[in-house]
Image 1 (cartoon, one colour):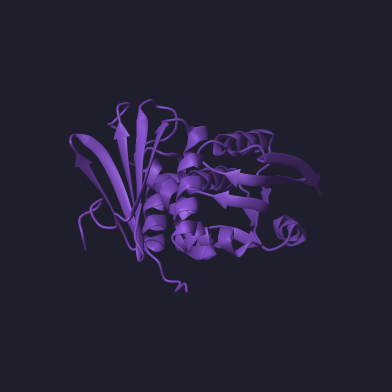
Image 2 (cartoon, one colour):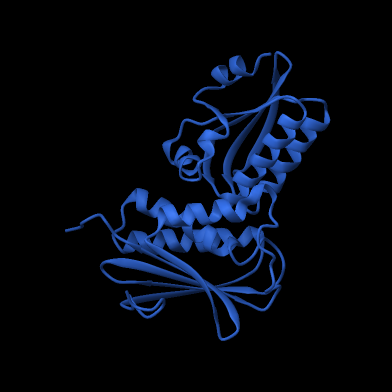
Length: 116
Length: 138
């Protein structure tokens, strides 16, 4: 089921990087939402969310990411996504969210783009 | 098109699960297995896994009680999945979810399946989808 779902947080040059692994669905998305909220609460207006090890993602997950993006932008920053898997990218494409998020193929690219 | 639930009937699988966020995965696993048996390709199976998740989410948001009664019907051309909410909160407000995921859910279903819809069956909320197989198997 969702045993493999994990979120780890690291920081690079003051930018928090949330690395998510496993399936983000209606059961696990609240955990991601809590991490994102905690990041913004800690005065981080810009966050990188690494989805390289995500194997499934539904509309609940998208909703959480959109919510995180809004909070970051309200705080004057941005939320950068890292996606390489075509199947995951496809979900963003068919929902039109590739036009909304800053999407990068590597964490390094996202970190560079997130620098002020 | 035949009416939902009356089309492909060569092979019928039924799944009944409590409305719990951590059990919706069972609807996905069953969809993947049925689609695989029906000769769907890997990408089509992945599409169906996501589509059935969205089908369930169109009726429930998580742990509001009741049961989801799912029916998976297939023939050589298509799979039809019907999801009925039995009991629980049957008056879920639309558009209440964070980040507008109801709208996102609809876009996903539009993109991934051939037909889908919502209706009331015997007073119970029902969502259904139909996906045709594109891969030809020998």
